[in-house]
Every structure is written in C-alpha cells, then in structure tokens.
Image (tube, rainbow, N blue to C red):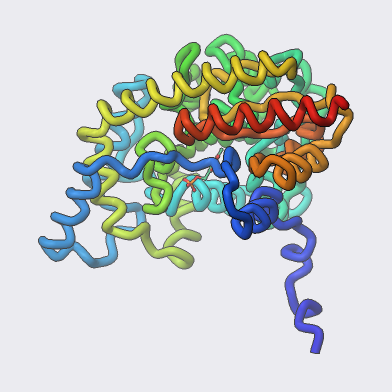
Length: 389
Ligand code: PLP
C-alpha cells in the first residue's frame, strides 16, 4: 500500500523545514557547536516558572476561555499601551494563542480564500510561505537586498501588488537577517497598505530584542490599528519557547474569526503557560533587559569575528541572528553549511532555507554562550582559510 497517495495535495506541495533537516544530521554527530537553532540559551526566569508551580498547587489545571484568561489579556493590552501607546479591548480584541506559530496559521486561515495573494518579503521565517499555502493562498515573494539592509520599501512592493493581493506579511526585527525597520520606513509601508486596501500581518516576536534603534509596533501607526493583526509571544523575549504561548491583537471581527478556528482546533492555550505569561508581563522586564544586554555583547563579538574573516556581513540590529554573505567563497549556501559541518563541526543554517533570496548567505544564531561563539568563529575562520587553498 502506498500511503503517501492518501496525503492531501496541499501538504505534499509544501517542502519540509530546511532547518530541521539539517539539524537531524548535526544531532547524530559528536562535538558539534551549533549556531543553528533559533532558541534562547537561557532557561525561563525562575519567578516565571515558580508562578506556574504555584498555579498548579492552587489547582489551576482546567480549560480557560477560548480567548485566554482575562487577566492575561489585560496584561497584554496594558503592555502594548505602555510600550507603543496602542489601545485594544482585552475582552474582544486579544486572542491568546499556542505561540506565534498558531497565530500565524489562524490569521491566514481566517482571512485567505483561493486565489488570494500574500506579499512576503524574503528571506523570511520558514513558516510564512507554507502557512499561506496551507490556508489556500498564494505567497508572492519579494526579495530584500543586503544593500538596502534587508528592508522593504513601498516602491518595491508596488512591483508585486495585483488586484488579488489581500495581505502583506512582515516580520521585523527579522529572522534570519537581523534587520529592523525604522518608524519612517514603516510609515511608507503603512501608506502603501492604505493605498491598496491591504491587511498587514506583523510578526513582532523579536520586538523586545532590538539593539540599534527602537521597535515600532505596526498597529500603532496612524490608520493601521484595525487593518493590522499583530502577532507576538513569549518564546524569545522571555526564553519560553517550550511553553508554547503567544497572542494576536486586532479588530473585533478578525479576532472573532481567528477564535472560531482556535476554539475547534486548540480550544485554548494551556492554562499553565497562561499563568506563567501573566508573571512574565508583570515582572519579567528586568530579565528581558539582562538577556538583551547579553545578546548585544554576543552580537558584537560575532559581527566583528565575521568581519575579521573578510566576509561581507550586515550588522544585525535585532533578533539574535547574523546573516553573513558567503558568496566570496564560491560555494553555495548548502555546500558551505555541509562542508563546514563535516570538516569543522559547526552547524549553521544555509540561507536558502529562508527562501531563494537567502542563497549566498548563511544564518548563525548567537543565542549561545560566548565560549561557543568564540570557538565556532575560530573553526569557521579555519574552514574559510582551507577552502582558499
Ligand atoms: N516568528 C518568527 C519570526 C520566529 O523566528 C519564530 C520562531 O523561531 C516564530 C514566529 C515561532 O514562535 P513561537 O515559538 O511563538 O511559535
């Protein structure tokens, strides 16, 4: 029996994640230094873990409202107001999701119909195009360029917009490039969205991890609140990847539509994670500050290291990734990553895992110790010297 014939064509059509495939190989090897995984190397701060333990002691083990605990939704709206002066109704305009991942999937499924196009600047997070395709939409990729610091402009978007374009999906600070967009940059994008009556989905999961410049929440721009779905979460800023919690904020109708799907598929986000997230928002600020200053130190270390090797490298401004060009080596991204892994045992991600426009680059995560970064830089330097010969 060929069971693969029974798999839905929409699922067959999407590629497996380029990151996972590579790391399965690395996991089998000994002595590998990984700059691959996009995950904080910190453990969730103790007071956040403790709040969850207290919750369990008090017997909080039930389902919650589909939207999430009201107390958490209130903390989310308070923090958005404090950070970006944007206002949401915690009762109707916030949905607590199983990570930004679920928020992304829900937003696409709630809004897209057959033939709808979604503008997706590239290189981009691996899930974006697949989520669009799984929801029945068509991703239209827009290459961003290192010469423009991997930012998008309205002029560039104009080349790709059609009468079928429904959504613009952006993610800044960016994974994999570490690019950010200034308020002025985003204002240009907002004017473009208005002109073409587009919905903007803004993945702001790295909002708090910004080193150079400040983050602007897209929905805080004039006229953007209701036409934007902001996705955010706790995985990166609070080192809570395994808790699986995030949120979406938008207008009442969009949130209700997303909640309709969520109530049948997830029912709710685990109550344990919701309790921990309340504590994170109430008292996690100092922990975030500490982690950001640590990432910032490592960012400089790794950026200087790549520059000293003679690689062309954009200085990342946010998130915890660096995306050096390896074009000078004459290898493709995949060849570079595979040969580096086999000879020097350093794992990183070939840039084309983030779309065709990532070819010629590799992604390194600096969410790992300075010791690992220093050792990895030494090994990469040796590898580059060896291929020159
Ligand atoms: N969005 C981006 C840009 C990411 O890099 C990631 C994880 O790497 C996610 C979303 C997924 O986040 P979550 O853990 O909240 O599902």
